[in-house]
Amino acid sequence: MALALQTFATVKDANAALKSRGSRYLGGGTLVVRAANEGDVSISGLVRSTEPSLFTITVADGKVRIGASVTMAAIARHPDLSAIVRAARAVGGPAVRNMATIGGNLFAPAPYGDFAVALLALDATVGTDDGEMPIETFLAGRDGSRAIVTSVGFTLPKPDGFRFLKVSRVKPKGVSVLSIAAVLELAGDGTVSSARIALGCMADRPLRAKAAEKALIGQNLTTDGIAPALAVANDGTSPATDPIASAWYRNEVLPVHLGRLLLS
Ligand SMILES: Cc1cc2nc3c(=O)[nH]c(=O)nc-3n(C[C@H](O)[C@H](O)[C@H](O)COP(=O)(O)OP(=O)(O)OC[C@H]3O[C@@H](n4cnc5c(N)ncnc54)[C@H](O)[C@@H]3O)c2cc1C
Image (cartoon, rainbow, N blue to C red; front, side):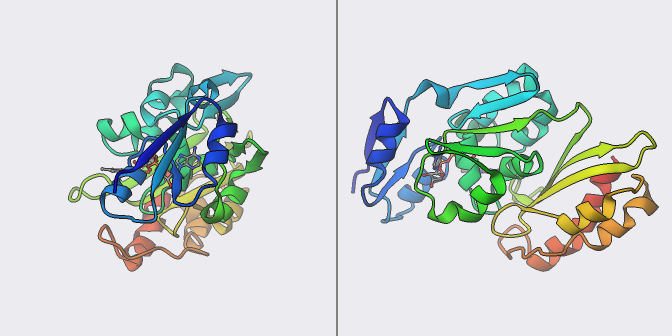
């Protein structure tokens, strides 16, 4: 069956069209078109919007707003977003990054969603025509969400305040075993004054390592100082076993890679 594609000048009209059964929003299409091609019969039509704000990046006074249709390639080459470039470059190869949007990444199930992990550590907000919500609220309810995501917003981290690490195999190349993003602030004496750590592939969607965050407060970023955080890094995780890695393996290597990220 041929897929119908409807294009609307405004998000409002596209949202209205999405109410019809079987229609799905089209971002870059790297997942949704693949699903349709592979025979997902629940998809009967695609809807997209060309509203200019969806394709815009603004950085002003340390605040970032990225339209949902902005691609990973556009984020990676933006001169004011160098602090988070590693996370954008972690998504697929060059061809995928030219298509993959930030909006679609928010919906990508594990083992995908590497950029959403970064956004969770950055304490981003997710915008729709109805307003903005914290990314944690969005991720918790995304399965039932029908509204078009219009943008994400976050405060630009200090140049050395954002850390990101993606672990993948040589074969098959690219897809995450896990990913970790951290936003850390240090006090004058070098101890951690605030920590936000997000994990990818350690559940069906990005989640925070809240016990590890708490254990880091007041500690130095030394082998001894981070040991309590590594001991609780797996608290609350429920990784999948998939062709990339088993749940057991993911749990085993998480503290190792979190340790490397914190000491880097
Ligand atoms: C070969 C290959 C390699 C990949 N490697 C990686 C990787 O390393 N890391 C990674 O994170 N991902 C990877 N992906 C997955 C995917 O490319 C990315 O997650 C990408 O960001 C998804 O965005 P998209 O715009 O292509 O989503 P689409 O396929 O367009 O959409 C995905 C889902 O999100 C919904 N959606 C999209 N945009 C919106 C919006 N604005 N509002 C509401 N709903 C929306 C769609 O309806 C659909 O349900 C890979 C995919 C392929 C094919």
